[in-house]
Image 1 (cartoon, helix red, strand yellow):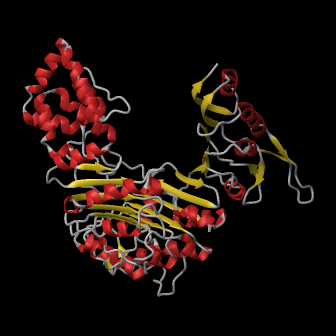
Image 2: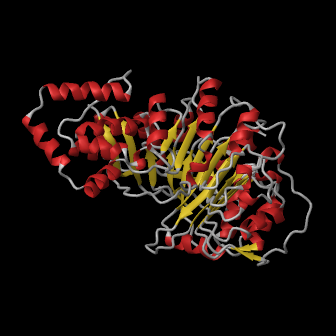
Image 3: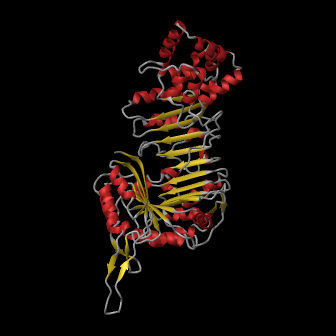
Amino acid sequence: MHNHQHLADYNTVHTPEPICTPSEGSGTSSPNTDMACLISAPIEIPDGHTPLQSAENQQGARNAAPSLCEKKASVAFSQLPVELALGILKYCFPDRPSPSRSLEDMMNIYTVRLVSRSWKELIEETPWFWFHLSIIYPAQVIQDSLRRSKDHPLRIHVSQAPGETTEVYEDFLRLVQTQSHRWLSLELVMIDDLLPEELAMSILSSPAPGLQSLTAVFPAGQFTQNPVVDLMSGTAHQLKGLHLCGVPIACDSESFRGLEDLRHADSQGLSAPEAVELLTRNSSLRFLVLSGDPAEMQNNAGPISPRGSIRSVATAPSLKLLHLKCLPIHTLTHILTSVLMPTCWSLHLDIVPESFSDFMEIKEALAQFLPKIRQTLRSCDETTIIVDCNGLYQWMAQSSSSSKEVFDFSFAVCGPPMGDFLEWIGRISQGCRQVFRVEMKAMDLGAWHILGCCEEVIELVPMFEDRQGELPTFIESLSDVVRGSDGQLTWCFPGLRKLRLEFAEGDLLDIFSMLNKRYVPVPIPGDPLVGTPSTTLDIPPKLQIWMGEATNSAIIRALRRHWAVESLVATREIE
């Protein structure tokens, strides 16, 4: 069960940002940097001051002895056309749907009001600057935002912080609930059952006809008295982005219609037909993430598609990303074989196969994706295998093609031997040359012995987080002689050409010792009984080595001159 839970939390790096309403005037520069260029003497708000007190006190100090530069700047700012001034301000304080506008940005908005009278009036009368409401804002900012946003749709952000009391959240939520008719987005993330169930139910059932994005994350068991939550009382007909975790909701709910982004973290109860129906009734769906609880996975009884067939009972014409995490094998294969996804260019599966036959069933269900997968394999320089703790392995690749349609994929598995995983990879990539980059997050000896015999592994990246001797063992093992799958003796990782040590702190002398052992001729005695002559084990390819901070430049220079080192790069060298 521990292994399964680890897989359930894995691979979150591949999901895209939530779908949001288009923002105006967003830019690539930092708002604070841009604003510093606009104001000749930036105003800083001391810790412990409210935005109003700090801003007004500093304005008083400015009025007492304004410099000539400040007078000219103030006049210039005051004479800007309203449209230009508003455009500059919107650029400096862009709409950030998730997370909400930061507290620092809100403090800066209060400060910039003091540039001139015209800017103060412009900012206070423009709802754009006030339609974000976050529980991290001071009470005065929340009240000002509610008043100055007028009838503008609101973005509400509530994320639980350690140490907060129930009263703080109750007061804030009851206040913003009175404005539910103005909600544009609601992000409610709770890490424990701090909220009373009645209040949580009340918030999630509030009528919100203008709601376009909803993120609701609650701990398991939050809703014990209510088996099903009626989201927004069925009024959220404009909902485009829906992210749910720990919220029980009926699969035939009206909230599951017309979506563009759906992340459902309690999908283990979904039947295979229900999962397919989610796709069919959301023709504009672009991102779909369905997550189950691996501890409760069961291969539910039901008809399974014949291997290799695609029963095109439905089409997802807009789907770009599909991520299926820890679903029953039957449900997963049913989705892959029952829905055509011609525009899907990002595929991620987290699976818990119980046998190699499960691997083969998934491989056959991937029939519609195999051409894209193999095209990616042909276009990329190498693919990545990640070895994590608890028997968790991942294989991933992204096309390096310059084409606009770049397909990327990742397959994370938990439980099976590395040998089975590699064999499955070989069948998936049939006919494509394989070159692997291996990231070791844990010293899994079983995976190490299997991968160590693979000539296809050309790059190793140790990423050990602990300091329990794993890195020294890793380095020392590179000088081992192993017996390959063909029965012949060979160096551990015989095709290794790149060794990246910048993510782990290794002893330079350990590296030196490994090189001295690995890059010397090793005699292999012959067998007189069968007439096999004595030979010498071939010396492996030279290494390109990357290191982090090197504290002994003398040893670094010696390593660079070592006959086994093609190149060595250290991010920082200390004498």
